[in-house]
Each structure stands twice: as C-alpha cells, then as structure tokens.
Image 1: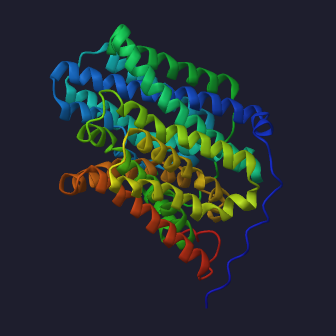
Image 2: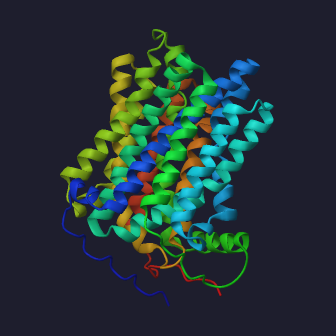
Image 3: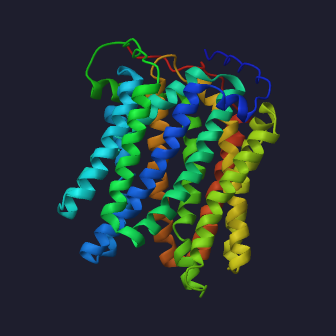
Length: 417
C-alpha cells in the first residue's frame, strides 16, 4: 500500500543575499566558481577560435565549442559517486588544477585537432564529480532560505561569468591571439585551485554505503535516483525548460541572418537571455518570500515559453530582444524547486545527485539546439523557436499536473543493498 509522503518542512524565514555571503566558506566557493566559469567560457571561445584558425572548418570549430558539454552525462553515470567518496577540498582543488592543466596543454602544445578535442572531452567526463562535491558543501553549510539564495547567487554568477567570459574570449583572441588567451584562462583556474587548497577547511569524505568500485557505485546510485519518482520528476523539471530555451537560443544567429538584421546585431539578442536570467534571479530571490517562490514555479516556466511563441510572428529586432529578455527572466523558476529537490535526496550520495543534475542540464542544453535546429531547417527559424516555447509551456502543464495529483511516495530513494 502506498504511504503518504511526509510534508516538506515549512519554508524558513526570508534571508538576504548579504547574510548568505557572510558565510566565509560559501563565499570562497562562490568567488572561485565565478572565476572558474569565466575561465571555462574563455577556454571554450578561444579553443574554438584556435581550431577554426588552424583548419578553416566551421564544423570542427563547432565541435570544439561543444566538446565539453555532451560527455558530462556519461561522466556523471560512470564517476559521479566520486563527489561523495573523496574529501571535497582535494576533489574541488584537483578539479581546478585539472582544468588549468588542460587549458595550458591546449595553449602550449601544438597538437592535432582530434587530440585537443579528446583533452576537452576527458575533462568533461570528470566535471560532474567536481561540481557535485562543491554543491554538496553548499547544501551542508547553508540551510532553509539561505540554501535557496545560495543557489540563486551561483545561478546569477554563472550567467554573468559566462557572458563576461565569452565577451572576454573574443576580445582576448583579437588582442593577443587564442594561445595567449588560453594561457590566461589556465592561470585563472590554477589560482582557484590554490585558493581552495589554502582556504577551504579540510573535510572527510562521506562514509561509503556498500562496496564496489567507483563505476559500479556511480551506476547503482544513478539508477536509484532515477527510479525514485519524486527525484526523477524534479530532475526533469529542471532539465526540460532550459533545454527548450537553449534550443531557441541556438537559432538566434540564424534568425537574425534570415531576417536581414544588421551585422553584429545578433550579439544584442544573444545577450538578452542571460541578462533576463540575472534580472529574474535577482527579483525573485530578493523580493519574493520562500513560499511564494515555490508557488511561482509553473508561472515562471510559462514565462520562459510564452515569449518564444511570439517568434512565430517574425518580430523585428527590438521586440525580439524584449521577448528573449522576458524568456530569460523565467529561469528563476529553479529557485522554487531547490528546497523540494534537496528534501527528496537521500542522506548519502547528495554529491552524485547534484553532479547528475548539472551534467544532465548541460547535456539537454546541448541536445536542444541540435533538435530545434533540425526542425528549423524545415519550418524556418521563427516557427522552430515558437515550437521550443511550446515545449516549455507543455512542461509547465506537466509539472502543474503532477503537483496536483502526487501519488504520495517516500521522500528519499531507498538505497540498494
């Protein structure tokens, strides 16, 4: 017989961003993560430019741009348990060290394109373990509304750092060339590794539940998470909306070109989404109470999709930018799911769960542009972007349905023996 799911604890009183940043351990993780994402974006841009300058191939340049995304899901499946099996300080510092080493290799060693792509792909396989360990520490050190705002700060920093890193990458390539720009990114990663190693407290790894190697434990843990309906629902609730919007985002350049917009105007449209994300997170995180954020999940996902539906009418430049800005602001829906997601996770293995969340998100965001780009070849870019918006609206409807008709399951996955 199915038992009723224990109710979530009542939302904690509203916290401020200043109170969250007052926690020195979180502040260190936040600052190093912001610098690290900037360096990642710098590496992505400059490596893609390096490949294009050496080969003249748009395809190889695109592969260089995306090589660090899709392998992350495989890395989470095979190595995600390392986020809980190793001491977090060593794992996080080692992750920055590995990223810095990879960037230095790309900058200093003249290797074949295939070898460079392999370096980036191997790094992507290990990324979920590093990110999962960091997210596990945030969940340990922040609680209640402070945890939600901590995730909000990380989301805003991620958007801002990606935007800044991509812009910096273009400027650096033009000023000093791609190899020197890659070397600068390597230095940034190495500084992050040193800061974590010297300033983050030394913590022990979690006690292991059951035996087995890293791959077996990772596969078993991922299976347990995905078989548990509340966790599975919350994972897809966070993966799907961003995948649909990423699908539309991947068509912005083609939309601008097919509609005769002036050269370079696509950059304004590309920037509108992350700017909207920053504004949405800031507004929802600062102005809304915890319970209100959780009630706003479905309306905010609808806000992601509705503006994209407007591209079926082929809007001009100003209206297109406004629609993308509105769509980006809906990304703040994730703040309303953080407390519920954390409550659904098992006591052990949270690092792997956070790694799976991040790697799945990157993978779905990589698949979205490919899927809707294919549709756009037949329907035109405007209609394809509108269909991506429809996908987000259908996701909002699905979430609304299961929130109203929850069958009531145990909060945490049952670990396998």
